[in-house]
Length: 157
Image 1 (tube, helix red, strand yellow):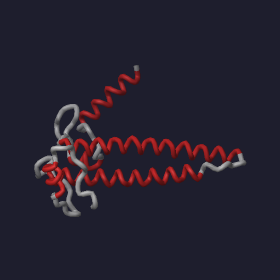
Image 2 (cartoon, one colour):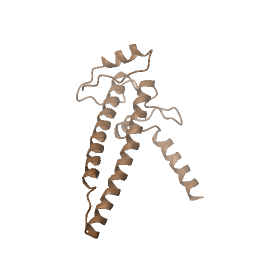
Image 3 (cartoon, helix red, strand yellow):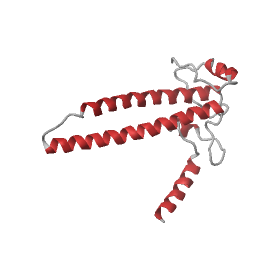
Image 4 (tube, helix red, strand yellow):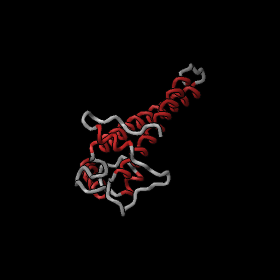
């Protein structure tokens, strides 16, 4: 991986230098029997987030290319309607990707700040399985479910 570390805030040079030295075998997976959010786990999730972000940025560039190509004038009404529907779908997808990239950036900041992996509601550790499946998670599964139930109740009012 070419990015050894993300740029750290001023004063954290020792910390970012330390992170640059973390060795991570290709087959490494965070395990419950090691200290929670140790340097290897943080590096694992940091790399996972960076790769995900790069994939999304690549897809975004592809989407923009498709939108530019579809800007032509189509005389047939049915074809034009179909193209407009495709364009709207591409734009929605692009917006979702933009929001996801923002969440990935936020997770990367939490890694740098030492807050990654802990629930923003309870302060409890988020399970490694949950973080592996959804590395942008900010709440434990229980806190997320409680939050969603509360949201649903308020939405129904």
